[in-house]
Length: 287
Image 1 (cartoon, rainbow, N blue to C red):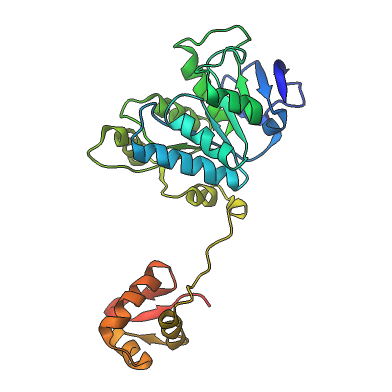
Image 2: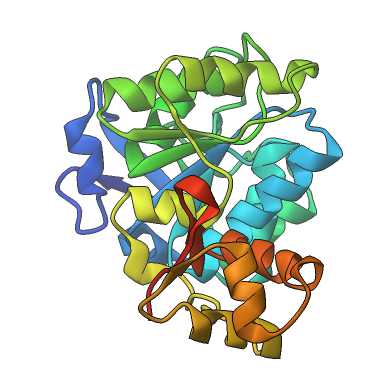
């Protein structure tokens, strides 16, 4: 772990090549922590409000945890709220996380236990020289580096006029993918995400949605088994081999009352094992 501040520039071996693709790239970067994370790909940014709901906190940590467990490096801004939960999620599984600061890396803000953990297990990064205090105008500049380092930016919760939307705007300008998590239509912390979705951001519900959209499906965890070991479900699937049947015909095939097989059919449909077409006809999907 590099405890001292290390300066890198465009000629350095550690320089992230992605920053060459953005308008106004930083002239230099200062880094502290586990230097190996700066070379790891892919990187996915997770951003959002400093005042998330319980749902927002849960989802930010979930996305950070599962994306890191899948091999992605989670990039965020160390701020309280969504950023904090995203970093913690990545750290929970021993994954990589990079905190991009609006101050010098020797004066990280906010300081505290999370900052210490990121310094020990992840990486602190800033374009501002050591000794530079956090200043209001630094943070919009910081946001362009967050998005510039990443292949995609996930917005978890944000108000209608949130700083996270600035990061999303930078991402669009930089040609990065933007993802937004939907929320309650009557909650102000969902308004920013819904605004992004209306403007073309991709709606996501699961971390695997992000990986699939970025063409990183091979990074994802192994899929769940396609079918459960329920005997009734196995019998229904067997009856549909080479057949297209309605519910009554299936009930006759498995010699059970219609009301007993309908819940199992619904479970199979939700699991993507059967599809119900026009006229209520069921067909088997896959093997």
